[in-house]
Length: 345
Image (tube, rainbow, N blue to C red; front, side, top):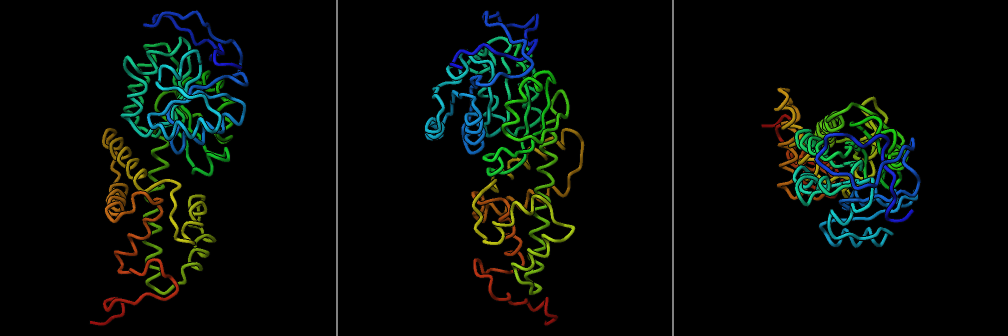
């Protein structure tokens, strides 16, 4: 359909909100109709892939990004450009955002220039960003006051999974809005978990990323020990991949580890930012996360060594450096064993 589709989630109109009706009404259809236009806010690394998937599935997109280069890229993929949030969401009933953090989410959603105060009554706002539960709760309260439904979609996977439509999604918010929007969410991945009515999806993402951070550090320590003990790099990876310690995460990262070309699927800097969200949420909830706090120091050290733009699994380099293995990128020879390891004085 064209830019002015009138479809919206079932029974979205509510009484007592601050917004006057724009006369658009809401849909009583069970699911989001095909070809409904989507307003997309944020077309960076993940936003570009997700919005491209939506267009490939037949959902036209009007996009806005504060970075002109990002906007130009998604326009080249078929989106209509918008040059403000308000312009992007005009006359649409579904808004999706993919932005880099708490402040970006607040900036696009709350306030006079934000999407919530400019969205039509009964619109559905879907946020796919990785943000803190605290910031998301602020947005939820504002969405309630403006009569806008709000779904949190926390996604787990790599850029490759986004391109293939095989992301795992953790969803929380209004269950009827989730059911209505499911044809769009299925485009991003069929493995979906509806985990609650509020910020549960945010917590689920933090749980997953906490495990990712600790696992990456554990792998780095193990590989450094194996190298120092004389194991062949490639064979050591084969052994781990065939062992009970193998995991989907390890298999995703195996090509990077084998070649030691750490082109980012998720950068060290981005995971470090997520660890900050984990530590803040843990403090707010009175949960000790000692291993996660140690992992934060490791990733900060890796960033200090210049690894921020590389994939986070490049943390293995830090553990090698700490073990005195400084032969990057050569891996063909057994590293020298320090005197203290060889039993010498």
